[in-house]
Image (cartoon, rainbow, N blue to C red; front, side):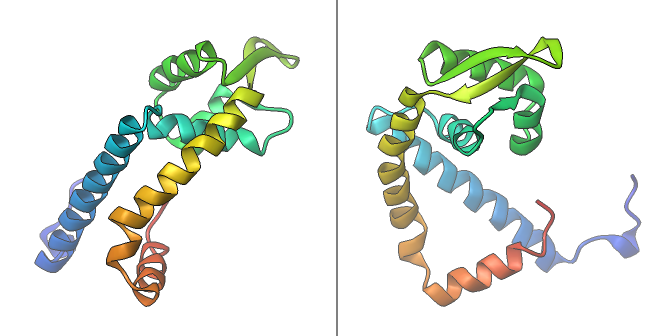
Length: 148
């Protein structure tokens, strides 16, 4: 897709975009660092386990991939590492002999419970403490206008 100059974003929009990306990357790096300091796995482990937590029958890899927007290759390797650590199990999919269904294990639930207080504290320290409740509502409202 070629953007016509008439469709080009304003300088203000470009500045807002750059700040959004920079802030997102900085905050995620701080969260990853904080989890690592506490001897916990990366945030993406938490995200996978959280997706599986509410699924009694489990999820197929493509379902996780759609929800998490990870490439198949990266997700496959990630699921292998989490399974090897004992935090999820795999079983054959009854509808597709080649597919597998992933479910969180009791160890995975325990890891979520262990990670959440640390993650919540990092959200508070690096995000919530810098914004008022009104700021958070405004930011949530603005971000809800964007796809995702």
